[in-house]
View 1: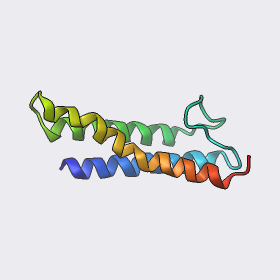
View 2: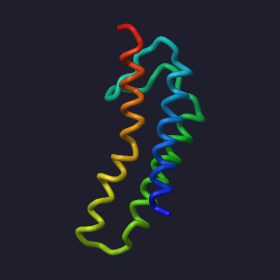
View 3: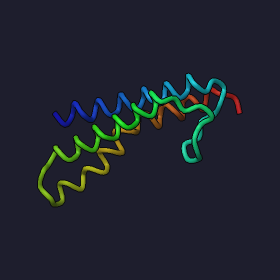
Length: 96
């Protein structure tokens, strides 16, 4: 079940990035700075769904507190890596 939730989180994060790039054509979206000029509500909801499902998957992966639960943070970051790669690819396509 946790793997399905991580895949759902990665898909929702990428879908959020797709909606952001469609709402802001020709704009380079920064990874680190502020909000884009247009930030659709659907993109916000998908990003929240992605974060929530990734956190829930990390919690349900191991209910015990200990060294195994420390894997939650890298797994959550790993769920958002496809979205980061998508944004970097999109920024490479948009002229500076």
